[in-house]
Image 1 (tube, rainbow, N blue to C red):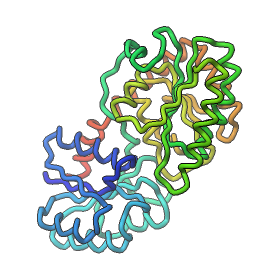
Image 2 (image 1 turned 30 degrees about the vertical axis):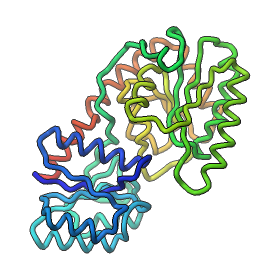
Image 3 (image 1 turned 90 degrees about the vertical axis):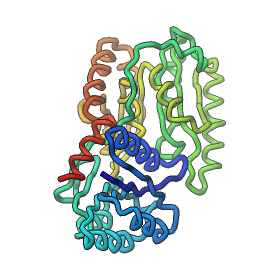
Amino acid sequence: MKIALYSSKRPRCGIATYTNYLEDALRSLGADVRHYGSGVPAEVVFSEVRAWNPEIFHVQHEHAIMPPNETLSNFAQERVQRGRRNIITLHTESQASAALASRGGFQASIIHRMPELLENAHVLPMPCPVQEASTDRGNRPRYGFPADSFIITTLGFMLSWKMMVETAEQFMPWLRENPEAYLQILASEHFSPGSAEYMRKCVRGLAALSVAVGGRIRHVLHYPSDQEVLERLLLSDLGYVYCPFDTKSASAAASLFISARCPLVTSASTHYDHLMCHVIRTPKGDLPSFVKRITEVARDADLLLRLRKSSEILYAETNYLECARRHLSIYGS
């Protein structure tokens, strides 16, 4: 089966990374896959797709990285007239994207959380990268952590709503009381306009907090490779991700903790609904309570073990290889 995946191919783009993982998994199952970038003029890409003539044209849709909906719909309708199938994954559900998916040009739609607007969608939880489970923390010295340290990690772009500096401030009493504890913040500058100054402010704030606890707040501000991210999550004892509001999308960053089978605490935002009952959820919008719950989980060895076992179950259901198998079933249905 020939499959054309259409999404961003921009570096540091979550949907581009998602599509790369899906491409590799589909290829490992025997599919002939090509990944086309939406940053190229649409008609140039569509001409290449016409020439290749794949059975499946699969759009990874996010408004900010796509050509106009009418352009996509017209090309999908053209392919239908030639007996070809089109699939669309909505990475953000909106009135406009749901309307696009419902038009006759797309025979199937996929979404990563329960839909509010889109009828008859295939609901596939946000997948996570394939990663061997490991209880070995031997890589800790490689990344500058003592072998017997307790590491709490968060991950995501440095955006104001993630409140990474404010969250770190809430951890300060706990860090002072627990000299073996480290806070690892994997947060680089976002590519959106105006992010550079906010990033500089956060770097200064986190550095000052780290000095106050003997350097035990480690801010990884470069953009790490996928492998480095997974290695850093594998050596972690506990993770957290925070969103103070509901969203129309699902967090791919949070799913990386599932790849590492790392216990995770999230705010009760719809952004993390795909993690279901496999993580600890706290009320959104209450940062002190959020951090308090993280430190309570950190002290509960039995709960940490149960969370690791639970993440193993979710991993088996949602890793990219399993996700690719479900995609092939949708393509052929």
